[in-house]
Length: 127
Image (cartoon, rainbow, N blue to C red; front, top):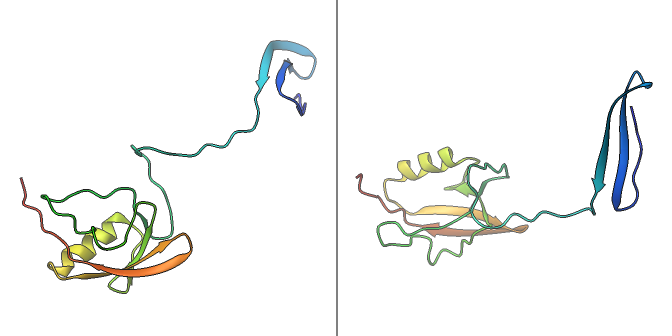
C-alpha cells in the first residue's frame, strides 16, 4: 500500500501493486486545495439532525402567515412547544394537532440565544 502524503497542490503519480511487487495499475491523482462547502438554496431529500427542529422555510397557509409576527426566522431551531421538548417534525405535528387551534408557546434558539414566542396554528382544508 502506498501511503504517500501530499503537501502541495498539483498531481501525483501513484502505482497500485499486488503484494507490493506486482504492478496492477498506475494512475494520476490530482491534489486540490482544501475547500469549505457552505450549503445554500433549497434542501431536497436531505435530513439534518440538530437539537430541536431546524426552521428551513416558512410558507403561507391559505393566504395567512401564522409566523409573521412571531420573530422566528429561517435557521432558528424550535426546541420546545408548550414546554414540551420536540426533536422531530412528527412530534411538532402531533403537538399542533393536540392544540385544537389554541395558541402554542414556542421556545426557539437563534445561534446560542434562547427566545420565546407564541403562534396560533391555522387549520387547512383537506383537498
